Image (tube, rainbow, N blue to C red; front, side, top):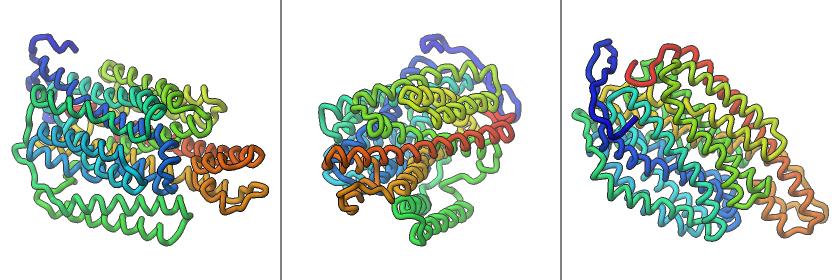
Length: 521
């Protein structure tokens, strides 16, 4: 793809099999793609640097196990809850305008989050960052669908869009490790401010404005219902992880399910629904979303455990943990460049399935790996294998929608990804927490009041903090038991990931057997 080449005519095939000319992108569109990559990279960096900050943050703010999970994933849930609303808003007020507003809000919220002085304040600021982040993702992806009309160019642009997330994952651990090593944990949030200012400066020059000609109205009750469906259900899952299975946790899950039912019923009655349920009648659309959600759920859950393993089990410093995180992120980024040429030679279903087989084998290796080096090698394998899945499922989802609904379609694609990531942290994090607490419930240290061990029974970070106040004879068995309990959850998450990949492979080979990567139903 040469951004400087002259315009040529290309042809794309519509659903009616009629050949129509597709405009090829010019230099401005390719430079605009670089501008779009900025917020995507920062979003990814914001996730990875926070993972590395967790041990330091835990020592200074002393969050409970439940609060720690909320700090990590409230961002993802707020993004997921507002993505569709923001997709519709972008269709109405303009996608570029929404992107720039979101960049300003994200930068401001990052500054405030950096100086949070309590776990509760950080949770609130992470939630506000999620609302701001929800303006970025659908705007960037839907702008790509407007800027790149040719299917081959669009697939390449989406691959580069995904690679920008990977680039953030590559840069994030190193930058975050240096910041945490020499500054305070809040400095990791300030990384987002300069790039957001840059986007606000160059965005109006390089990005086109686009408003849907028949954009729907924003339905505030639907937006609130979507949050009311997600947050109580997640709270119930976290309650089970922290306190064991109980009626209270079940009640919250049922409340969330009830609001989800009301949300769906409301969409059926609206002239301009927040979620276009007609899109879900397309089997390929449903299957692509399901694969996206499930695959990203197990990937995110695994990476959160890896970040904690590096520092809390392997005993690496933040900088060392960042460097050991680089291989898998760099491998994912490089593999993203191979998706487009491979997609021209293989059916999407076969390419995705082959990749997910590689990922499943990587997770098998992760479950059996006995050392740091092998665990990192396994993470490279499952990261590379998952590379084609994101680009191809995104292309199927966005390509299924008419032009005036691409904002909503891209928002649904992003919602499945964000919800998958947040569920991975919540569900798999809760699974790991529950198994850790179960293994640590009967741990005792000779000559020590059992009440002193309560923080150690909640999280591995709590165990490390408690061990600092004990004698070597007392701390050694406590740390051994705590790390063993953590690895029990680590291996359980790997097993769930293997099962998730198998399910996704079956869906890809059956439902998506004849699906196109973009531009077709």
